[in-house]
Image 1 (cartoon, helix red, strand yellow):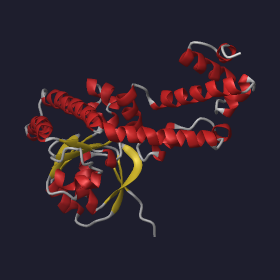
Image 2 (cartoon, helix red, strand yellow; image 1 turned 90 degrees about the horizontal axis):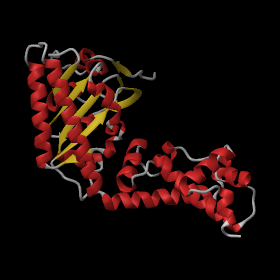
Image 3 (cartoon, one colour; image 1 turned 180 degrees about the vertical axis):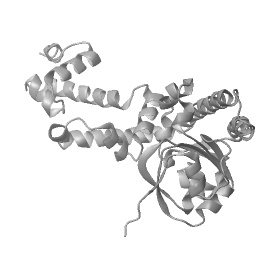
Length: 303
């Protein structure tokens, strides 16, 4: 008989499912990894969770999160957004000597500046293999923020506690953004390798006429082809070459269009179709935006 996933929509349900002590706040909770381990206790389950989760684990489990030789080894952070997709909870989720989870609901940040900004923190959509690996100094800064948040959770709730937690949580997430920027920089060699692999995927897609048959490849397809999440690939390209995935692909297609316009006399419409554009007008607008001239104007330069 197929086991249905457990659905968690509130902090209380999370604590109940993992047999934790009762939460001290209805919308945000700090959970020590050791207590969480006891709640998992060898259980294997599929989980749907309508909560944000920020976690930190000590560096002993870094290999489980694709730590590279040039990554820091002090600790590992992962992030999870509320999702209807199921994820597996088993022993690997707690395979560390120490750590913690900070869990909060979407309602907790509603009507705040953090609510308006939360979608900018793309790392909530990264895979666990794209975790953040921290130095000792970075870990101390995160722990300082966490200490302030936990202190507010533990104290009696008053008119100031929500504002203090929201501002400190925002600071914590901004620090994580900075540390991810640093990690992209320290992984520059790997990033170049990923971009080379991405170019290979696009070249093969072009050579095998997949553009004509299937259209312009989706960002999700390209990310999966290089074993990354869509958001991580997009952020990597932004950090390395200041282009998102969409513009990276369009630049590739315009370069191929230049070759097609020079080497043969196919119509503009046929070239646009062969390059995966559904509409000739879109191809022409894209080409002019990237080159400053229309496809016809470009072709005339070589007559």
